[in-house]
Image (cartoon, rainbow, N blue to C red; front, side, top):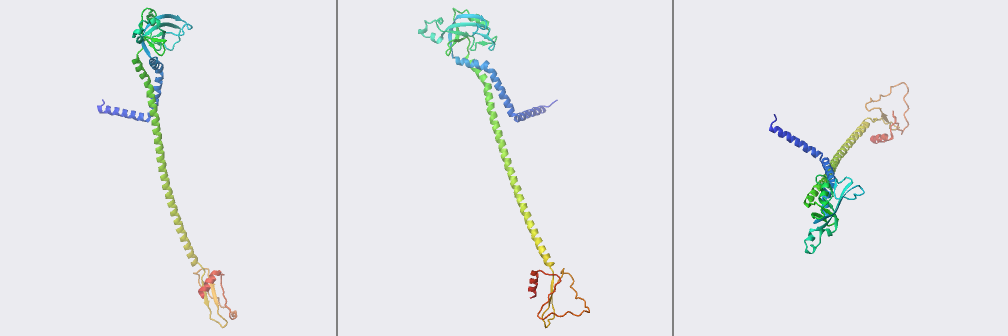
Length: 331
């Protein structure tokens, strides 16, 4: 047994589901309703709208009619027209001809028109309604012919068209024609309103999609700008780190080259009467032990160089710039 609250909640859930479904398929439902309304309008056009419009177009006027000719014919060659037809879409094989003369009530009201008789007026074709056709039980052609075919000496009320004097009808109702016209045109109005709503709704959705696309493009541009700025910052940092590392390497290499450069020692011997002797020694490393004097041998000592001559001995040839530096330091 379900409680009232549970039933209400289930009904609310069903209503919410229906609302979500309609909001999701709004354009589809509106398009379906518009198409259905147009189909209904096309079906009512020959049955309701056309007779209603024809009632107002004919401009019917009340009159008094008198039958002047009647005939019941059979055959398509004899039935070029008929006063009554059961079914508005069937072929005419059996027809009824009823011709009347009429006198308009507005003309008979005048004293000057009193001497005019209906049979002296223009003849017109008599129809049961403005279409001249219908379906039983509203329209019964046999009964219509029996009723008005023998009215040669008795007038009967009718409606005559002022726009077409050859048309006279038995029944006409302007109020019912107006109501039928409104009912017949209502599907067309609904179709047009739904079409306008669908077009406006599609336009709004297109604008929303464009707005979302623009906002998305703006956010992507901001993200790209931030990423570019961050990339440039990292590139600058990396370049600064590389420059610092290169400076450190250059300074380290310069210090190591200065520490590993060959040392030169200058020894000045006792000045002899012939001049001064300077010796330069180059070692492979600054930490190499000093070269020991050559061992003494029994060979006679070398002859002293001539006077005013300075002898320079080097174990390894030195560069000219280093020689210049050493010479400047010695002086």
